[in-house]
Length: 181
Image (cartoon, rainbow, N blue to C red; front, side, top):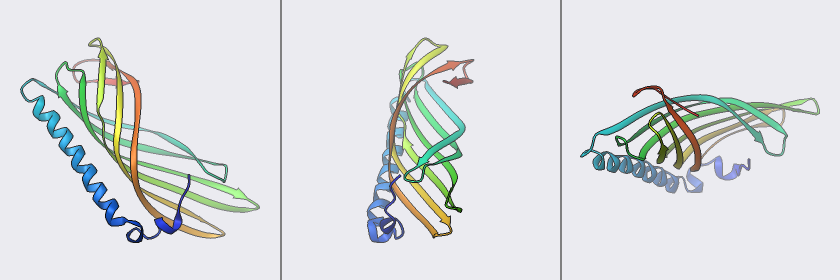
């Protein structure tokens, strides 16, 4: 992880206004995309899903050989035409990790927090009870970084692009309960 502390310590001096505009724009795109999906599927019967997920998080802290451990929670709202192969979603989550690194008898503590907000389209394929999917993520994150120890401390914030893609499967137990694999 590369941190530019001069830029991150003062949000307004490094384009904070521009980043705030990007945040508002990305939020508007997410809401607009979900609203279009709702409007297009309003003629047909709608399928709506709310997923709350929780999990463990780990990452490497660059240049110090420290592995973090932590947790995440995520809420995802998806909608589309019932029986359709395309779902449009909006997601918000929270991620927190921390680590301790000791070198030369001195311990440094690291703590990372992130709030990702993103649009999540999903393409489904397969039978009714078992469906595979391809899923995307396009949005932004708001993150905090804290490092403290014998050499001083750094406490800073950042915002930026959040994106990705995944593949998986859904097993439908009944019309209202499913599990993602």
